[in-house]
Picture 1: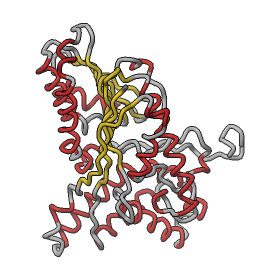
Picture 2: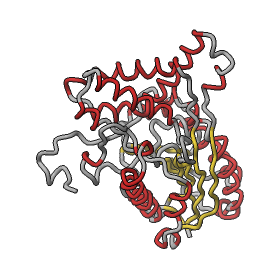
Picture 3: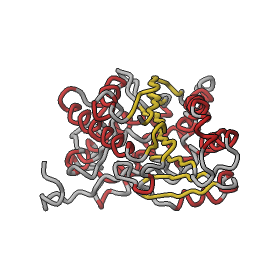
Picture 4: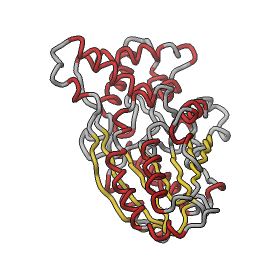
Length: 365
């Protein structure tokens, strides 16, 4: 397949999916993952307590958050890790690295008012970079790497934008058979690439903790109702001639929710097993944070409207940048219509947005 530089006719903008500015305020379900992964990280820290107690005071304990957005969601977890490690070696310094392709403005706002910024001997750095790149600043220094709700995004820089196209669907998990296979193989290649790059950075005995959003079969994949509603809306708007068939084809979210078996197949590849040992692999479902608050009041129109607004805002926060990419310059204003319709659909037929994960711990050999 020709890439953009090889084919001058391919004028589409690159997919660069980023979270909306209000993501942290509309991602309560994503934040709830801390309660699942926290005990796993605590157990790991206890298992290396002797090594931590012997660490030189001149060598900082390094933690990285890959796909952090603004840093808010992982901040309770970061604080708990620091407190636990410091209980074993009170004088240790910490360096926190936050990686995302979004701009650093939102991170700066978070960090300036955060408790972490006030914690002694804790330094932080936000680096605007894809997690499919090398991080020379981490080489041989990373003690704990963490990623949540991030590694389903595929690397969009190494294929033509035309790779992410479909005439009627907007996401690979909506596809089947051969149409889905190319995305399965792309995700596998991308995730293996991520792990191989991180293997140069994690210290021996260090660990990667990943909460990988996953597909458990049928319609059990994260926020599937949101993706499917947007697909239906875009098809409706195309039929109404509000967007063109070309725009419908180009509207696509470049992520893939792998199955547990697909994740395990990557971890089992020799080039991965030579570098990492699998310590933990567990499917986990984090219930929708919003739906339970309203499910006993769904006959109340006001409650349905409030729930629909919360669900639509969460979906918009992580999908808007991708949907905009598919719209022509003349139709960029249609983005509001898409999400207004999404809110109406959630109001008509409320559906929860649970997050299915595979909780993974890999230790560097």
